[in-house]
Image (cartoon, rainbow, N blue to C red; front, top):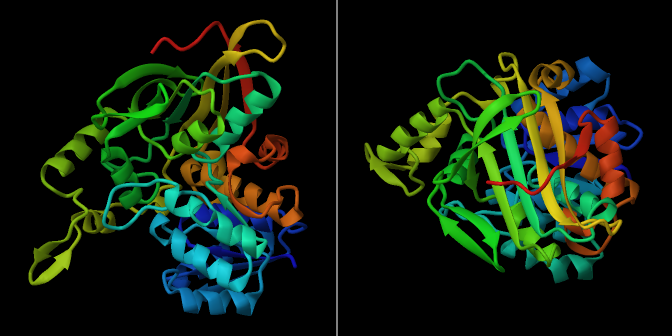
Length: 403
């Protein structure tokens, strides 16, 4: 059984489906579904034009489990790739269980009415997937995803232990807009405005959102200010690297982005609780997301590069004492757009989603239950990054980070 069903039709889905079509030996039959079929049709048309491969499209509300179950059973895929919103993770997992197919996503579940995301809801599915003989692969994007695999590759090949880990996410691209987010505005703003949390001393330590700023020189991008914030891979890394003493996540933002976000937050436009407007309830953040530029429309104007990676310190495998390694990937916005019609933020998530799916489809990654990327052999994933558009590099640093 070699069919795959992708759910969602945003920029990440577009990249993933294009890359699947470019690997037709692994994905000979691709199906794509979302709430708006016209978006699926547009992706399918682009795929046909660029690769000559056919993508079958469908309209589905991913939160309607019975209807989704029927669609899955009708198609009969080996794997469902969930590239919809994180709110929809659990119903899609339910539908996969009901239909008896494997599951993959790129971002962990979060409830609509609470700016909180954690793995507990999905980890609770462990026994159900195990008993069904199915695999659920969580977080097969870049961060989470590649950044976790980076850490485990270092632990397999360079470091016996990882005591300190910093994940650095830099987008040096310029899309020419006064204010826009590079992925789903609702999810992006919820993440950025949430309190920062990092792992230290066996627990998570909370601090104000965007409260810690550090300058850093990124290769191929230049100097950028990066801000400490919480990201979901910290939770799984702390679980699967038990010796970890400190783990932090950093993301770069320009001054203009911070200014716009501060104003929007101050006037209540980032609220996620409903307000009454002209007799109807609306969620301010959802309204804001509706009027901001769509991330999938930014590819044609975005120039520059991304640089995302891990800096890890620990005991060297070769017994030479403590060492620090920096492993990272640089992606060009214009090259990503030329290949798939999408900017590098979508590309750096969509390609790992395809790679994770390829490893599940081929059986290179297999198991029964719910798995995070850290639990699987990093080597086949790292090999495919090199050949599928996200080549990485690693270098030894003089010592641990000083920030």
